[in-house]
Image (cartoon, rainbow, N blue to C red; front, top):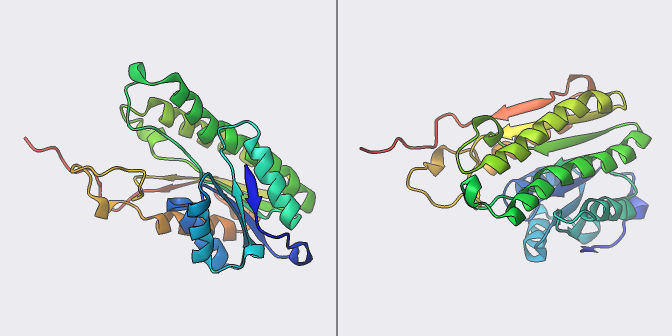
Length: 252
């Protein structure tokens, strides 16, 4: 795990956002929206090449877009990420827990234990740990925003996604439970629950109408609505669904 970028301590009074899974898809779209809003970034993922592409698209200089290579499956990953962000900028104003992982749809009886462990670690343990660490730093400054990205799989519980659905349901429950605690500290905490989003994580499937899916920009705009919401009127949960069902009816 490593960090890349120069330390902009002299400009630490600016707003700072940490985004996990920022190398592509929803995470990249969120990073771009935050950059447009004037935030300096700490963007995290496992691929340096993808993070470099995200940084290039933001148009931010290296000293305002810190790259942190991290695999959030490891227990030390969250501490490494938050530590790198604080070492670089001195504070964190926004945390977006977007990183997630799932194998192709697999019946529970055929699922590998290693895949179960990775889903629990990346989708649930890591965002809980990151929230706890970032919230402590935010509370010391009197405010901040944390947005967790879940999935409608938590509600729809599709076959073949039992563990993934469970991790996302756990993330929703964690956000709801922690909402009141952190609100008392002056923080905003919310979870976004999107339906199918057109990303590379969803393989080509003739039964799916990709044009009907949500776009990554749809989710990024929802994140910004939470970031910009008044502290006293921040929703704890935001559900996003496409205007029409992307799943085509079966023929015959």
